[in-house]
Image (cartoon, rainbow, N blue to C red; front, side, top):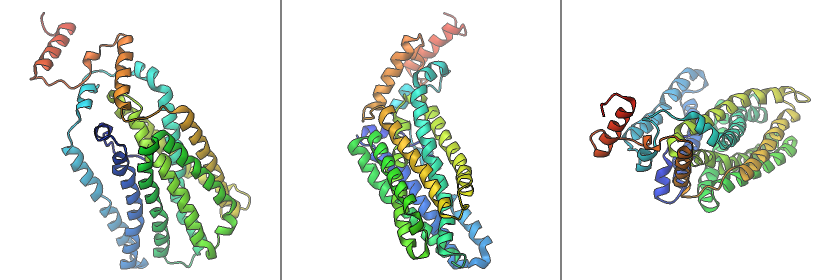
Length: 352
C-alpha cells in the first residue's frame, strides 16, 4: 500500500509514532471498509437492475476524501528539521546517496514489495472466494456485505498495531505481525477444504480476517514508518517514493501471479488446491519478510531521524560535499543573502 507523506518530524516532537500510523494506514483501512459498505448501500438502493448508477456514484464519492487531504496538505507548514536539511535547493549527490543507503533501501523496498504482493492480491480475490462459498445465486449486496466484514478485520490490527509499534518499536512490530500472519496463513491453507463450504462461511471470514489483521499489525502499519525514519531528511521523499513504487510493482505482479498459481493448481482455480496454494506462497513470503526485518533493518527510535541527519551530513563532508548547500534559504534573511552571495562568487556570477 501507498501512504500519504505525513511528516515523521511531527511524530518526533510528540515522542510517539502511533499518530503517524493512525493518520496513514488506519485511514486507508477505513477506506477499504467504506469501499465495500458504500457500494453495498447503493446496490440496495438502486437494485442490481441499475448498476450504472451504482458505479458512477461510488466513483464520484471516492473523490471527496482525497480532495480534503489535498487541502490539509496545502495548509500544512514544513517543520524546522525539513527546512534545515532539505536538498531541494541544490543538486542531489545521487552517487553518494546510493552508496550510503542502497542496502537499506533495497530491504525496505523488498518488504514493501512482498506486503503489497499479498495484500492487494488477497483483497482482489476475496470476492471470488466468497462467491464460490456463497454460490452464484447470492445477491450482489450480500457479497459486498461479507467483504465489508472481512475488511473490518483490518481495523483492530491497524489500531492495535499503532500502539504495539510504540511499545516494542517498528522493526519488531513489523516482524512479529508478519511472522504471525504467515503462521495463520499456513493454518488457513491446512483448513481450507473445511472452511471452503457454505456451512462454514463464518469460520472462513474469521480466520481470513485474522490473517488480514495481522498483516496490518506488521508491515501494513510499519512499512511506511520504517521508510520514513530510516533515511536522512534531505532524501526522504525520493527514498520513500522508490520503496512505495516497489510496493506497487509487487501489487501489480501479485494480481497476475496469484491467478497463475490458482489456474495451475491441481484441479484448477476452483479446486481446494486452487485456494490453498496462494496461502502457501503468501505465508512463505511472510516468514521471509519477518527474517528480513529482524536481521536487516536498523533499530528505529524517537531520535532516529535526527541521528540519520547527523550521520548523513558527516558522510557528505567526508566525501567532500559542501553541506552548506543543505536547507531552505530565505533570500531576505542575513544568512540567506550571505549564502547566495557566496554561491555567486564561487560560480563567477557575482564579482568578489
